[in-house]
Image (cartoon, rainbow, N blue to C red):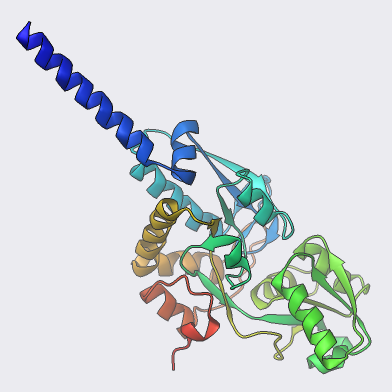
Length: 305
């Protein structure tokens, strides 16, 4: 009887410990543990970060980073299997879908800035970009001032359209701002002459120009609407346990030789589906960010001098 009582106490203690372990999980990790599913929000035209290939499968630099985070979550939760689901998002829907639990992280081309940090969190920076405009060379538009009184496209719900709107008002430029639903639509308006220019992150403009029917017909402005701004994988706010897993996974990736290889795969080599090569070498600022991973929204923190 005494032995049975001891065994009973041991089993009870083990059960309580298991219960306590389960109760310690919260937020995204708890949700993933309970469902066995993690959901990635992706963009359909943010080349080379997050877009669809010929088979309508989400691929890209940010997608590969997110899959590293998935591996880390699987290890953290000691799961034999973890299903990955993909859910499309747009500039306007990405934050609401993250907040309401439809997606668990957003893997696109989203800038980390103080305004967004009021609603969401970000992992370590994986790219730096500035807001510029693309136009046809034949239009001979060299500066933001040259956009005065003209029709200019930008994507709704982005930092880009806000910066364009602010510059328009501050400089009294009289620009007719045309909001697009997606980045591809913004560029298409320039291709079809519905707008003289499109204002987006410069790396996205480079990808659209490279993938167009006549890449040599386009030019990206040297004049910028912003300082170089950081991209990060977007997470739910106030979820420190999940953010730690994501931060540890991304830091390990960026600081390893694999980080440079992953960058080269998407920016220095031919990428699907059209075999484009953006030929954008890693800059000194991003090298610094990879060596010392940071989730800072401050552009000045990435300066090398």
